[in-house]
Image (tube, helix red, strand yellow):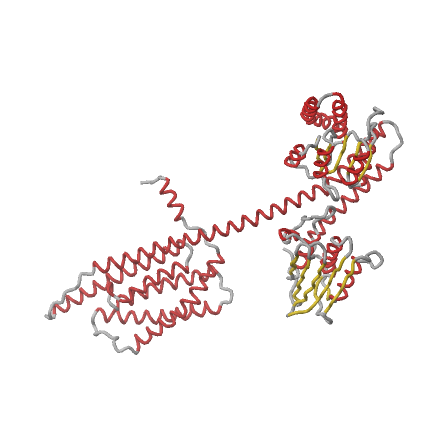
Length: 462
Length: 158
């Protein structure tokens, strides 16, 4: 019968396995199988070694069914031991564990674990065996190691079935031995009815399998939801940034287009009226075409920042060069630039253009916020494999809600700003694994702190 | 054109935009005065009469929006036309709500601008003779017809 009630549909949706994240799967595989199960197995196998080869209680009467089972189990143990050693080597030695292979290996190993535990259960008393309590452990381990629903269900069902088969085999063996005993004329001993504890134990295993699966689905869904929320926020931010880019591009390009259109209109009218050609309009058109070209080139330049050659930069001379570029001595008398450098500083492996753009953009910002003069402090120091450059001004400062936004492309508070300056700063710093942060308080100036690792490879732009 | 008509004020921080607008407007018989900032425009408006203002939305210093609000407050009868490259319906609605006479997205057709200027001129004339409500009606009809006019202009240009 096909049930189609909304509650059922909802329940089915709720329990439908979510696709687990591969990274998460690999993490679980490593964390459980290598870091938890391996040490446990070491103890478990050591105990079994003792049990099989040195234990005083081991060794049944020869010729009985239990003796045959025990000897078979012992054979199985040897194979099991060899397999475990192989898997342990595989898990410990592979530095970058491949997910699919790892999963297959662990799946087979989990299955063999189940079979071996079933064999041990058979040896140690079937349904009544104390080893029963290892079965729930196996179920939990499978649930954690195998987030993929199908594998987990196959394994845990096999755990339940193995327990059942081991129990039944034990009952059969016991009955057989009982018959033998009867035949040789000894007192008949009653075989306890195993149904009651068996059902209880079976129920616990089935319940555990189901709840582990449900928990797994719930965790996975919760993880996916939080990941999606994060993704949504990031995408939204990207869209907003893209919107600003579009608005800025529109403004930058539409202005010259408007002017060209006006000039062309004036030109057309003059020509139509037979008046002399207004040269000024032609001049305007050419200027605006040139400007549009510059805008497009700048945009392309921003997109291709990572091209060029890397040099060994002397930080001090680069800083001084940038200061000289932004504050030509003859022009800026109101702003005092104070420098304080550790000497010598380790060289930075960067493109000269990138480093210079970073410093020049920050200095230009500082200059623009100090129209009436002020102080700018440029410091450079070396610390634990990092060169730290600090540029501080005593200007009006940045409101706290803007401190992160200022690094976004096309965010500008200046009427004539392109909004690219600080985006370039951050981008240029980040391609060398460096970073930039701003510390500012309204009325107390702004401090840009740049940190560049001295020994990193440049991250190439994807 | 009418010699009694006061000049028209153009506020734009782009030199070439000012120059090209001056050519177009003076060819049509208007007397454009050009300034590059809203602050300068306000100073000039305090001193001299203008029949209308054409202002860019994005200006250095005070923005076109702030300028529009000030103009509307101090000279409620003065038609102010905003021109912008950031043309979104929301911005257009805000501009009209803030008292803009009209709103032109860049790049606009020069005919379109001339049409708006002509409309502003007729409204200014009307405002001198008729009470305020009649002027409002005229403006309302004007803004309703401006879209149709623009379309006509575009099809003419094409």
